[in-house]
Image 1 (cartoon, rainbow, N blue to C red):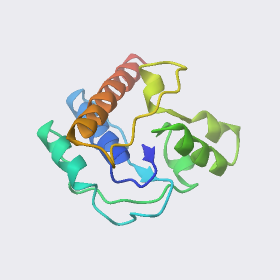
Image 2: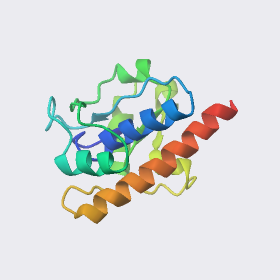
Image 3: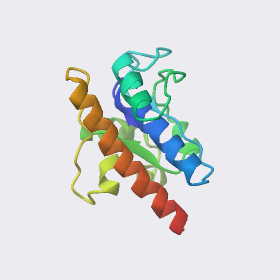
Length: 149
């Protein structure tokens, strides 16, 4: 799960995907990162932590990190939260196989629409709730596809 700073959207997506995978009995390696290094080592935004907790997901233990080229070797699926982060991740891809692992998260529920998970950083509590809702729907759909394969 990749966003810009790894403090709002991607840690929520990481926590939600872990939560859903655990409930469905799927063993997945899940992580999140930012394309920028602004918040390396920091906790997720307190509003993201509070909103996730309100929805039954604990992300308080997560710490920000920057996306690295080795992530292409570690993960089969790399979900970007928006076009800008998608492009930033794709510039690090060393080959076509790496590029094939990367997609926008919301394309799981809105195929080929290339919709972003909106950045709630400058928004209100309602914006953080919307992010949770979108991410939850996308992660639920993704795990259903995994169960089918």
